[in-house]
Length: 390
Image (cartoon, rainbow, N blue to C red; front, side, top):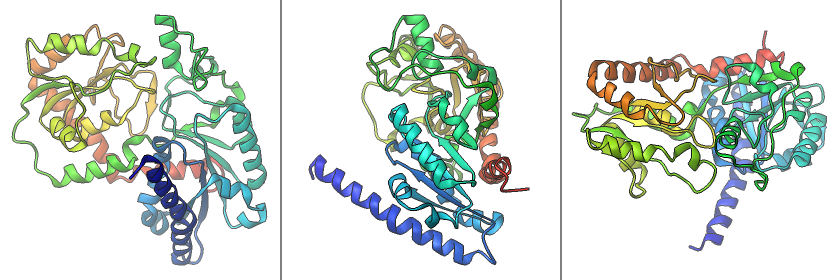
């Protein structure tokens, strides 16, 4: 099958899912809600960024729980279909959720949000930002929405009052330390400051611990027997791409090679499939997890679920839910330049009880979040903030 045919088939499958399956599920949920669902949500997105789209996944994964225990029903439609409908066709919904690709230009994004605001009318308009980084892509959008939900936010809200070179604080860091201008990167244009009177709209909802592949891994490790032994001391499997992100990762491999003189390490020489990747994690004690386009990545949660201690550049500037980045409790922070990577890893390996304690506590935080239905709590907070729950 050619790539063009694959894209065509993928597009047709997506059309069927959004235009037939999602509405059919919604009608079933409404019919099954008695006497009426407490809150009905319409979620719209342009479908362009798969990792961002995962922010909507819990609505589907927990739809029965939401309907039965929280009297919430939702449906996910393509943005173009929502914008094409007359506003009167959407009067049965109590709130509108919106999501755009970060590749959307600011003028286009503002036009879309204004149209969505007009469709929503007096009902809440909630923007879901599934981007990898901490910043607000379009600060001018904030006055048009009731709430701006991110996967993770700055722990110090004052950091939103700053402007950054490039798309985020990470691009700004690379600019300041290595001199990159980002002037030629259309998708990393300067990020403006958030107006002080809009800061309260920014809310951490849930991070990628609720993404589809992470929930699948969580169920898998719950059902599996623990590994008989961990034969790898330190693993790092991650690309060092030839773009600005390489400056965040270029110091890892030399440090890992030096560690290889004292312990057993895995450093990538070729790409492996997901099964092999998880087997490596299951038999590793420590996983080094760098920043990418944002601070948090699947590797962090995958490693914690697989029982590894995550060693990662200091996350003290990040607030996220579930709270999996508690220094010395659920992960081990290191310097952003990896100068203390070897020291921290060797110290962990010299103290196996400490290593097992941190790994166990990280796993426990995730398990507690799943067991206590953290998504439901987050969604209830969102609805309270926009006046749809008491």
